[in-house]
Image 1 (tube, one colour):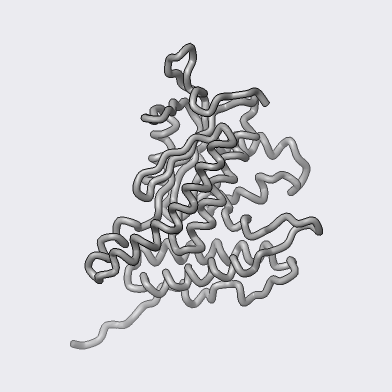
Image 2: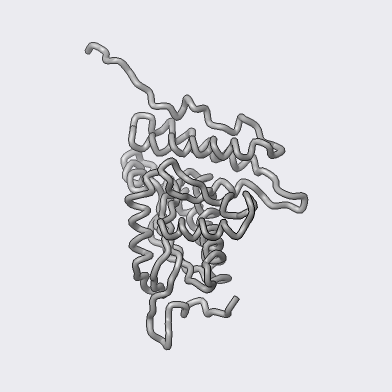
Length: 277
């Protein structure tokens, strides 16, 4: 791998230039509504402190990854931008680097009840200490705001093509992409952040069931809180289906129990008959 300086990958002879890059735009699902609600029910400082604590830890983690790699990072409020310029001919390694950072961030935030929605694009981009510019940023933002209806990080069409090409290097399900990327019902690829529950040990792989159980509890809490808000409830109903799908995929691991699944009844839309008033 060639040697790069952390802050000049998007400069050429001292002048800004576009580089083909992966770009991710991420935010917390429904965060603005949660902030507004916290002011009404007098829990604003509690929410602030909760978010600040987990966000600061995750941001510091991302910053350490930036210092040790070609990854670029920006944040504002609950918005996070990650970028990785191209250094290889097929961009497979670059995809792995940015995917792992997104997945870990998404997973750790979800365990604290902050579910991430976002988009991952590939295209021309410029990043320095003061600005971000380029079509990859526009595409990532549009994926987050228009395509990622549920709390997932979706891939753009070209990134999906790259993933399909990279899988061709491997045989069967041995490719890392098969574990870390899933396909939604609409055919759109998204990052399987629950793969963070599978830990690599000296004895092989093991399931971190405690984390999966915590993820279950956070979704069940959200389903209860938003039971009377159909649009939001639908997002967490989808998330419960994803959680249970993942549970089924790891059911053969030691330590797994069906108790880790979410009761489908909790995620079902409830109907009522008219009552005379």
